[in-house]
Image (cartoon, rainbow, N blue to C red; front, side, top):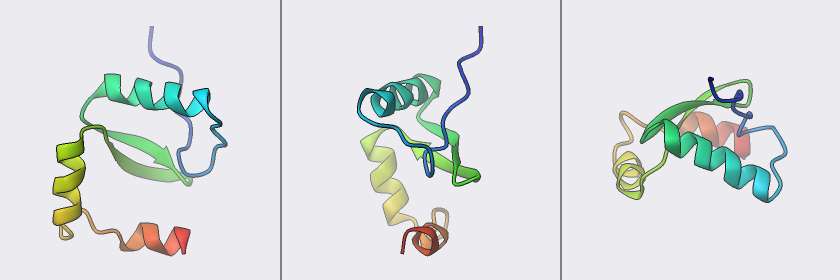
Length: 71
């Protein structure tokens, strides 16, 4: 049975345990998972070393589009 659809991590309200359950589901799906984000999609990195690598690689993982949403 496929997992329930993932929430939109940019716009859905995910209080407390709802957020933790959604994150656990994503972690079970892999190290880097495309997730719904503000009506589009974003990469959800589930391992610290992948996050560190992404922050160091602005060419492959530019943050500009996200900054336009949150600022």
